[in-house]
Length: 119
Image (cartoon, rainbow, N blue to C red; front, side):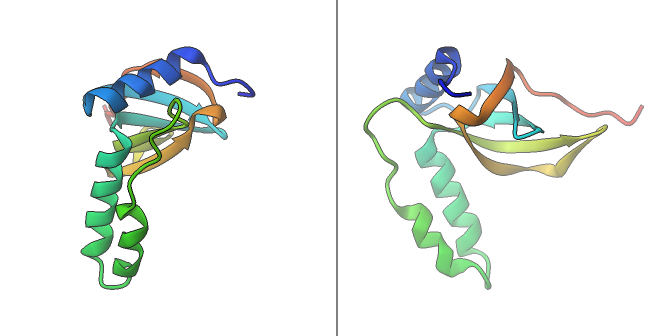
């Protein structure tokens, strides 16, 4: 999107202001479909830092995510946790991952996430 959809910007702002991680969203970005729950950027950064800190090979990168998020202006990114990239009838990864998506790159979206079934 050249000009981000004002509705999705408003949803992201509400997630940021409420410090809630219960809003489920599915977006199309760069040809990928990502589905999951949104998290405030500070919460998302903290969780990524924790995961990196626990890794013997990647712990040095955790400090990058410890920096406080930018506070000025409307949100520019969506921060997904417990999220999956849809690939056919499967979600990758099965347990959910942490994704950061630029709002301006979202070409389509819907409220809610998709679940998977092999039946």
